[in-house]
Image 1 (cartoon, rainbow, N blue to C red):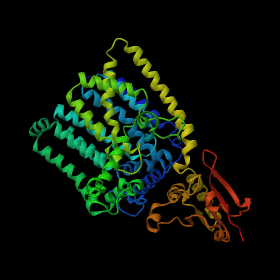
Image 2: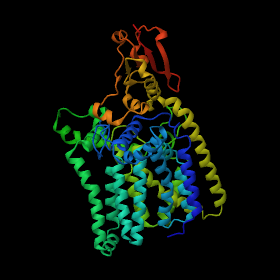
Image 3: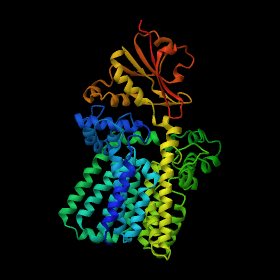
Image 4: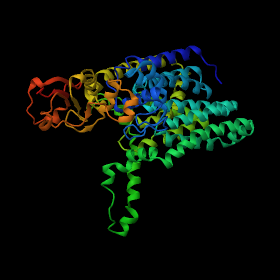
Length: 539
């Protein structure tokens, strides 16, 4: 093992955490529905030991019917308990684990005999990568799962070399937590684990034979503790199957419309059957993740078409990865090449099996594949004649790219897409909570959108957060008192006495409302109206 440079570790840790924590409450621009759900369920667990559905310490959080994995909620619970219901508490765990991932990556690269300097630059590359920064700054379970995956891979590599039972023990825990953290890892981690065991089976058998039987029993017990509840969720509850069905590729209308209801000929039944069409559709989606536009120019979707954007990787990474692959193939160790190949082709697989086209969040399982060629590229670049000039130029490029990302992230992204982060629900909920004693009833629309009521939201979650609503009451009643959630029906609602209506412009498009009754307007960051707060007559 190469000697660890402690200064490298300090720089990586401080720099990575700073990028992810600075102004974390402001950017992203608003708590998403998933963040709000995780935060309130964490608060409910911290206060009562039950989720919002009154289930005691559940292994899957039903929430809005999407059955969220439990790890992020349980990790967030103590943070919310200490810091309260706010953006910082919601995003703390993701930012912390996201900031620690480059730190673990450095240790991992040192373990596979990459020199300290290229290990340092590879870790800094991850620390400033917009793909990783963005999802680390919000409560995204995929970041938690990625952290545990990289940590597990680190302990696996250590165990293969040093053969200490504790390293295998922590590998099992880390990989298990990764599976329990995010849906994509439920497919990805078992496949990678299968490859790891298959590729090094002789070394594994030799290591296991030298391990104390008591330690093996302990490791097996830990494995069962994580596995048996998961099998129960899969086969005896709707938690896993409902989520899989709701995000399955089979739900895509483009696929459903192409499937045959009846076959018109034997040829069609053999050569153009539904199974073939499904596989063809999936394979096209899988290949779409290798599109250079997704990889290097437009993958993060921070802006609409025809505007500057960023791919999941940076443009210069094309050259860096190419150099790394050349160096890996010609001068690297075969086991590293095989590991890269497995991670590279398995990475996009979970995302390709779900709805949505080129999904950068679900594709985070792909990120570890790029660590190896990037590290080998820096290994090569730190040994050539003009290394100082080249590395200085790369450093300037990555810092410039970071500045470019910050500009897009803090200006263009909120301007174009604030509504897709449910912007306005927090502001409306805060007003409703602060003034609820002034009204007999409050109605908040559960649809929103600047171009029409095209999206369905979960405003009750924002009310729960804004009102600091007692979880023990919500668990029993599933309501928030006088605050209710539906679209406005002005033809009838206008005759209600002392009612506050939080409506989108589309809810009341053809209605004649006295402008004096509009007591507050909430706009998206692009200036379009998100919600109107309307007060009915007092008599």
